[in-house]
Length: 315
Image (cartoon, rainbow, N blue to C red; front, top):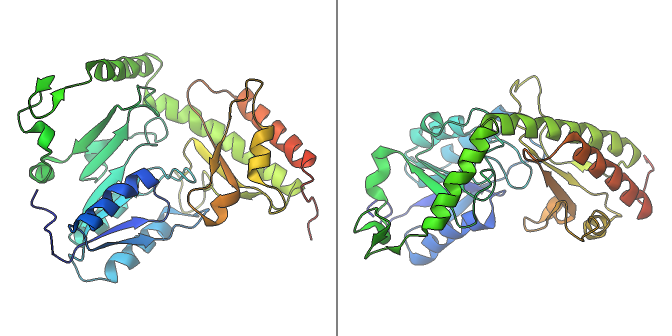
């Protein structure tokens, strides 16, 4: 309401790794005439350092006049590779170039240690309730810095914030209360930081196992960033790990072999982002997972690749 003006030349800068649900809002704004278009920063998989990612955004923002981009929109944790994006650095660059930073935090709760929205640099930050918070579907949060609150005036809040208002109807109180109970449950179990630490340790263990398997199956390629390197002592790895299958093996066949006794999928197929992700899978962890789950996954994957005749040659 006043920030995006119909007919003005204004763009959004985002990445090629965003969740389609997050992109749909910006595409709708383009279709409605409030945005001129969307530009994409291509994120490598794997990325080697926070500095390299920051440089990509710096180059993209510098390539246009100040004010060209009204919004920089990124995921805090990429749904594709689990990489933790350097949003503080990106926020600083966005603000220098006259843009707001909007962050998709759907994957961040329970994956990022020390998550603090007030110091993140984000002007707006969204959180999904049913993922890391273990809450009901349809629940979540929108955090907005006070300085931009005037720009966000949804019609459903015209009459206030009560459980029932004419503009918004009856609020789903059971969903709101359910999310509250979920947060209490996680806090009683040690809190989100402990969940994130646990998940990252499982992810590191997974990466080590996948690197071992890649020596046996050279076509197996890690897509997630390394947990630590010289340029980034804190690491960019969350509790999500993605890996590309060898070219002579179909990921759908692999996933069929990784189903449990009840026929449930234990990993996620990455197919909506194209390119290398057309033959990749993703595993993610939470407080209820253990090293035993990681080892079962690695052993099952190795057995599946052998059964499917994966090429073990190094040539």
